[in-house]
Picture 1 (spheres, helix red, strand yellow):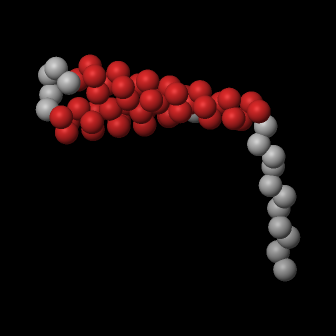
Picture 2: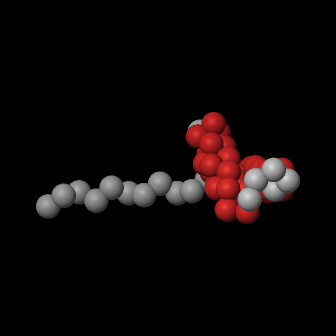
Length: 61
């Protein structure tokens, strides 16, 4: 039988990190969708916002 590994408890700093990253992605998405709206169509606007949020995650990590 395989030994089961004990799960680590989630620390308060982990929760703060996750909340901060979620907020940063949301702000980045909002800036990109509102900022691109003047120059591109709606579908391209949402796609740009999605990629901005993904890039934020990679830069943050």
